[in-house]
Amino acid sequence: MSSPHVAGSAALLVALHPDWTPGQIKSALMTTATTAVVKEDTTTPADPFDFGAGRIDLTRAGDPGLTFDERARAFTPSATDATSRIDLNIPSVNAPLVPGPEGHVMREDPSRHGGREGSSRCGCCASG
View 1 (cartoon, rainbow, N blue to C red):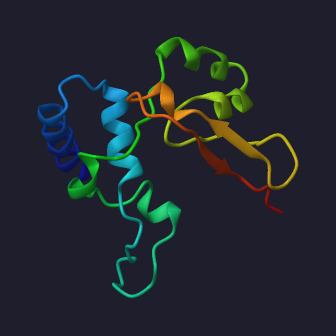
View 2 (tube, rainbow, N blue to C red; view 1 turned 45 degrees about the horizontal axis):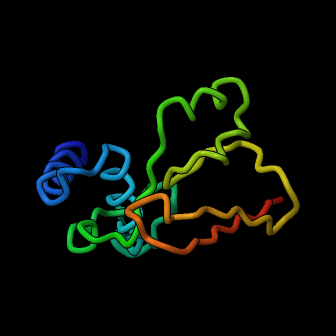
View 3 (tube, helix red, strand yellow; view 1 turned 90 degrees about the vertical axis):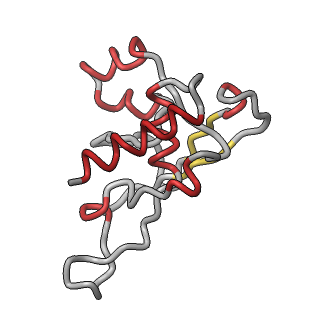
């Protein structure tokens, strides 16, 4: 049932922000979703394999603070080099190998999006 809920939520955001791209709509839905959810037993906290980006929160999605958007041509390098996915300006990344030392920090400038100044920092740590 998640697909109709996501489609309906996206339609509401398009009505609120008709100038947003599909990537910005997806970004707003993903970055404002709540991850405070539980597994089917209603007790055990869910993990990322259970909830993905989380449960959509439309009370926050209309004003996410910043949105990420990427042009289709930027995805081309990832077809042959999976590690290039870390350079994509999207709200989630699936890179099987994240290069760099543990605690490597990627930096993105959100002023490219929505005209907001400043930057945000995203950290990733190698595991195992």
